[in-house]
Image 1 (cartoon, rainbow, N blue to C red):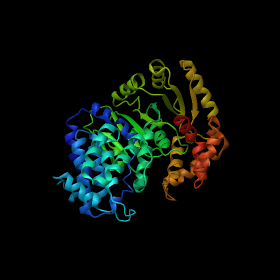
Image 2 (image 1 turned 120 degrees about the vertical axis):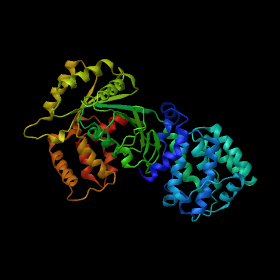
Image 3 (image 1 turned 120 degrees about the horizontal axis):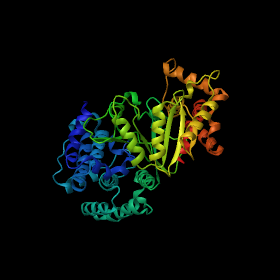
Length: 476
């Protein structure tokens, strides 16, 4: 375990001991949709001594107003990691007199920050950590700070409180922190959007996790062949891209790296792992999204996988259920058994979508997409399904396209580069243009194309692979 993980365990252990995992998660579930504004934080350019004093003030307020909050503890740890970087080990909490400490911090002017003192950025950081979703607690914090700051700042502090919680217009004295205020409101407005939850189910090796990664535009989920434990993966969309991925897997890590995301924490005794990240959508949505990935239901080495999948179908709340078939393997017995369970126990009023995946493996001389869809449609009707949608898709091709569109470089002459070239050639064949199966507005397609002008070939691949159409349907 690396030093970062060790530090996180040390910081969070005290809070973890106070709560059980289910209750703790319920307290901060919405915060998985809230993005950070740390990357452009003005304190990053200050001296180490100043950063430590600044963080001391933040820690004082977290200890005073959010001592039992796992989210506040994890977020404060993120501040320390971001602001101190390699100097993290030099941090020490020595804030004995908050009045003196906060005055020293507030009087300093930021380098290159329009000569504005940091007093209002400091207040926003305190409120973000301790009372983002609690105006009452925020009012108490503002009252304490007003008693510490000089009287001439009280009117502006009153205005800042109203700006943050009541959407008042900012005064000229708050113009320097208007970017942070804008991000604050972007977060709060995002939380007001309706949450749409999609449950993804499939048997092993159908490409379900690759499909989810393609829709999100990031590698968040392992393929089930990599999975070692049976967990539901809840993935929440965040308000905007901030460069941070959150993960709650016993520990709450607000800066989870690839290794953390790909490795289950054995101390997590629940059956869920929760992730928060900005979805890289090419068609912006007015809703918040939650994608729930389930284990492969027919995993022969662990019966609990199937049990968790069945309970997710029958007991969990979701608006859409997406069932993924692997092209060439439909019609096997355990597939029909699972489908019958979904028909009988699934949520009756949810939208039901079936996908035929891995069609990048079809050969135009031997395989027919239309014939496969007709056969699958007949099988679903024989089971008794009604009012469903059935689409062809290539999660793998769409995932490659989305990665390039999102700014990732696939090096020439690498295996992935040649796979991308093969996919482009494959989907240039009109027989494999899946966009014709999706009833999506032409205007929406053209708007999305305009946002992908630097990667026209990859957008065409995203569209023809079916991933763009599916993304639009699931998020609109």
